[in-house]
Image 1 (cartoon, rainbow, N blue to C red):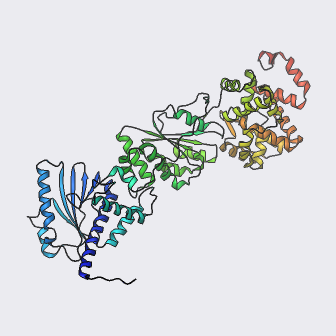
Image 2: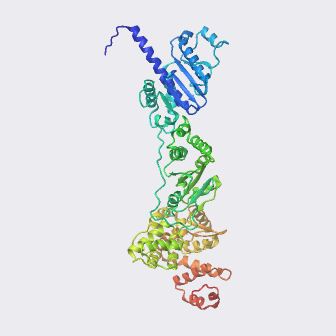
Image 3: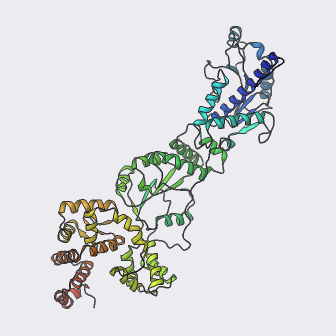
Length: 593
């Protein structure tokens, strides 16, 4: 399209004026990007001066000049007169704090002007700032020669803003437009002022709480010797199989904790992005309603670890601490957790994890020991059963706890099955689960079958053969059982034991005794039955023989009960009768009367 202009000189003057205004608006935007880091609380545009930077004990007044040639004294005569008037306001106490005056220019001073500003008569509180000049103050960005240079500098600063949802270029033009509106006294900044408190919203830094604590169960029942959520430890590691009630415990105990809390499920977070994700969540949770604090925390260029450090510093100033709960911590490499938990002493971490090989590395790297939730007690299980209309005595519920490992989800699910399919009789559902004649698949089977399916053959066979024993065996005893049941060599068995221990499938007792976790035993029993009668028979005989061999030196009642069950399962009536009539076993209380 062809354009016309009657007065090219007038057009050039108009263009120069608007270039000057745009340069000024971009420079004010650059001051905003540096404001929080420099301790600036307010940025004011087009008031007494082009830009004013307010700090708690000082005001910096900026006159912004753009020239095609060197700056000369006549360019700033008016500004110097205003500086003198403002200086008097401060000296006479009508304005608080000290004052400083800066001429910001895109061009260097001319020769005569350069001599003047270095002379004794030049005011000591007035500085000239241009692209090649030394730094004046950390609150003042280095001026640029052109608008293009200024835009690029602002774009680079915008690019470093944490959690910004706008493209850097878009954000720069947005702020420049807001500066123009504020200069004209237009809402939302009709008072010409931008505060640090509003910067996260102005920069459109998306600091919203993406995750909250999961809702606690409508009827929560505490676990045995249940710990508090916040107990003063810097880092805690709480480990349990899926269904152990870790998340329910966290959500319930959070209701009774006065500490600052944040919850984040890190299952789908990559290790390098962990600090950033947690920083966003914690900033939103703790400071989301306190914009000023956010403006001092979400500084341009700050990494996730640096933001966490800043959060910790502000908590320390308020003499507070915060507890961060990280769910599914076993999904993250231990090295990535180190940088996270080391960010600030004011931040305490509770790591919820499932048993896996990662747990040992987390323990070693962070210097912590895994804690276990102990599951429901007999009384708690009975209370849950009563609420569902189930009936059973102490021994019935003890039997159910052994089948389910006491894990709340599995106990609750089994009791619901009892209520719906077995007329509420607990002993019937226990018998069905033990004999694997139940029709409804339990949550325990559905959840743990995924774990079991990931085992290799030696590991599955180890779980299967040892699932017959509900008492701890030594490693040598367990190796004998596997050798006779599946012809596994001791070296292969030892490897399987180590891997099963890291997955939480094996529970350690004392120095060298272990057994399969009660919750996993039903899956092992199913595998053993499917493997064929010979393997089941051999495993039973192996357990029987090692118990008989150890019996003269080990009168443990649980081992005697297991031996009696093996006699019954194998149809060994004669030794069963002998034990039932032997006075010594009655005196020891090993045989029920």
